Length: 106
Image (cartoon, rainbow, N blue to C red; front, side, top):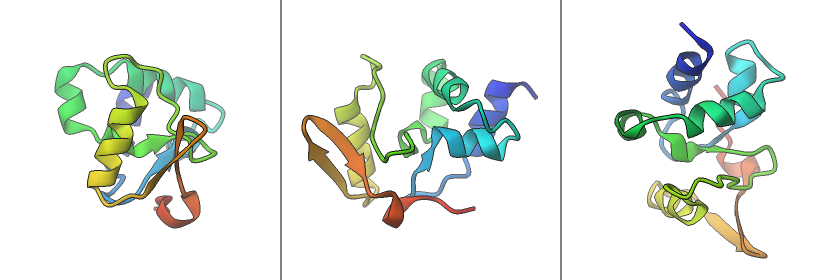
């Protein structure tokens, strides 16, 4: 299984109501210094994968929704997380999730 597929399989395990970080996913697949590559894997998903993989549950290590994707902007990610009962705060134009409360701990 290639790196991207390992990322997707791990992201599928993040339960509804929880989030994980890019670095956390990288560490779980045995590549702890590859958080940025996890981001690229998430960005590379096509429409079919977007429907099957909970991409919205992956955020940065500060709890910040850091997507820059025009197709799926931060506001959309925040809205989906809120529908999953995750509290998202807007601070200085950025969306944040409290990792102490919502971080997935497998």
